[in-house]
Image 1: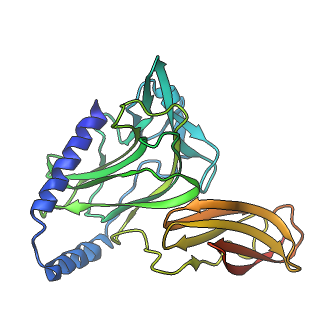
Image 2: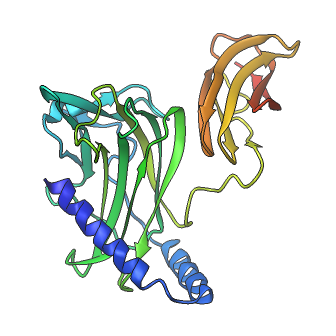
Image 3: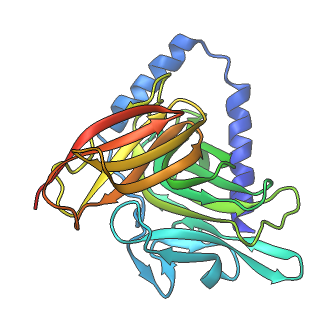
Length: 308
């Protein structure tokens, strides 16, 4: 299938990267800096990056590479931002056979025009895997010389569920020094043990972007609770926090007297990373509230103003 051929190419590029990864740390830093500076002036557009536009049940600017296309990839209103997101589903083919949803940017070629060596593809996801062998595959790759030669690529697998949106980053490894002129991005639910992912597994993908930094901001060795945005808020605000390692997390919104008015997350086990939780404040009275994030029993809090 098309997405398997693309993945094979990406893994080949990554192996070349590892073979050539004997340059000094100094040269790596210089190369990264030059790529970053040159990328700052470049313009690129991922097709339909927030999956807001759909036609006949398919996301505009993307190709569904799984079959049946109409059920393995569907539209969701559980969006990170905006009103829509992309859902990857697992569908039964009869008996024990299943197929995981798979989607790839661009048309039949899988590539869209994009000039410049961007360092990352970023986005947000929710993941619910019902089998320990199921995984979410993410990959990105670029070509140069009119789409003939491989420029850089990377792929990785996610097997940790998250009930709220979590940020991801695909770091592109450039291998031959050319400037990319086209790019492809893809996502798929896979199971390389049975080749039949669980029919109850699914994933949400939303809000993709190209970056000039090498990875998602690392949470470091401390919990980070960011200021909610917007703040003040009238309809909805967003709580973003980062945790440095696996932890049990609770999130809630409290009024100024300490009364819980909106439970958002209750004793959820999460892996390290950056998370975002939307909170609906449209029914709350104007005033000052406090949002609290408890990580393994340690409580972090900030104020949120509701103003209509």
